[in-house]
Amino acid sequence: MTVRAAGEEGTAAPPARRRYDPRRERTPQRLIAAARVVFERDGFHDARLADVTRQAQVSTGTLYNYFQSKEELFRAVMQGVLDDLTARSDDVTARERDRDRDPVEGIVEANRSYVQGYRRNARLMSLLTQVAERDAEVLAIALAIRQHFEDRISRAIRRWQAEGRAYSDLDPVYTANALAYMVDRFLHEWSVLGLDYDETKAAETLSTLWVRALGLRDGPRTTP
Image (cartoon, rainbow, N blue to C red):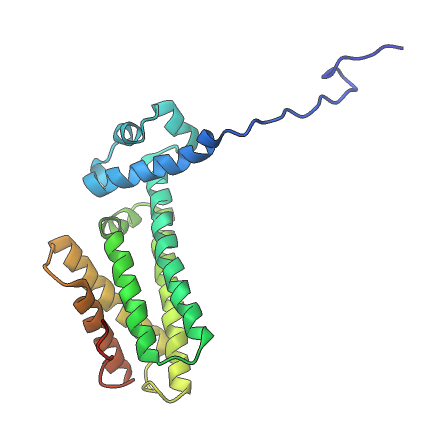
């Protein structure tokens, strides 16, 4: 009887065993973190992959094992921004479902959370629109952020209208987008122009405008 060696015709070679390398698992996140530093510092157009590899302390070859272009790196960075903003929004929504809470309190908490999240990511948010004009996948991320908040806010408006709390003649989707745009525009100019605003007062003022626009009541209670 002829015994064939592993790998010869008619005999299946055993599958290669991959050794787990924690450093390899961490490398993409290390590159994304480095890219974020470079994009925030230099903007998108002036950012260079060489600066990213230097910041991450890896070789150019290592970078290309994970990302093929500056655009792909930017998408990965912005996906992290999307996750950051929407995760906290989901937390607020979950708390609203947990108990019959005052809608004004929910608006104040949601706007405070969004203001803080936007400020954490302000430089990248200012780059998002620029890059979205030339990159369909980045545009998709921008639209996902918009859609997430449109859905959450419009659902809340419908609920408040059904409960008789908010003006019944407001279109929930148009109103949700108008209020969200007001907040984004305010935060964009605050960040880009470097205005000397107080974060707590900004969130409270935006919330007061929301509450009065929706007819919920004269304004939110003063928050600490």
